[in-house]
Image 1 (cartoon, rainbow, N blue to C red):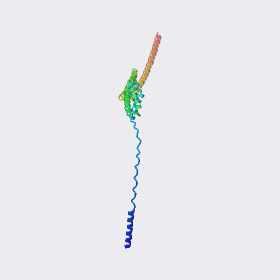
Image 2 (cartoon, rainbow, N blue to C red):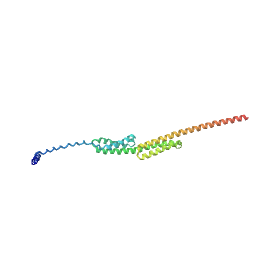
Image 3 (cartoon, rainbow, N blue to C red):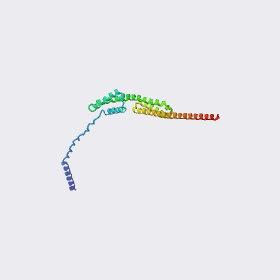
Image 4 (cartoon, rainbow, N blue to C red):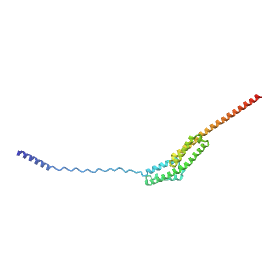
Length: 222
């Protein structure tokens, strides 16, 4: 028993000596920080939105050929637009202001030019309406005439709301409507006149036949 205890004590002592003599683990080397990769700088087009607005308004002016209707405003807007394009890369902040100036000019062209164009188109529509009335189209072709009147009213409303494209389309619809009512009423009137002429001719023939019959009867009586 004493021998066993002695062996155990010796084993414990050897283990303790072994643990005490073991070297401490070396610390792990610190990792070098990973380099931060920065995204390349994003180029911001400061004038993009202003440019798009000016180009859209300019396209409306060109589509409806409104420049000659407001020449001074159009020339000023074109000057500002050209200068803005030239400043796009070198002076973007200046380009923003110039595009805004061009947009304001094109809006003025659209407003002034559209009203000038509307005055002329409205006159043409009213001429067609007067022609239609000259053949009583408001009676003979009432549906076509009333539809044209509605188109004219719609055109005036759209013009006030600055819906210029729709307004000009409505004016054209009204002009075509009055022209169609005039043509149909004129043809209808001409057919009626021909019928009356045919009737008059028939009545004259009948009167002549009756007169001849009476003459023949008088001759027989003699």
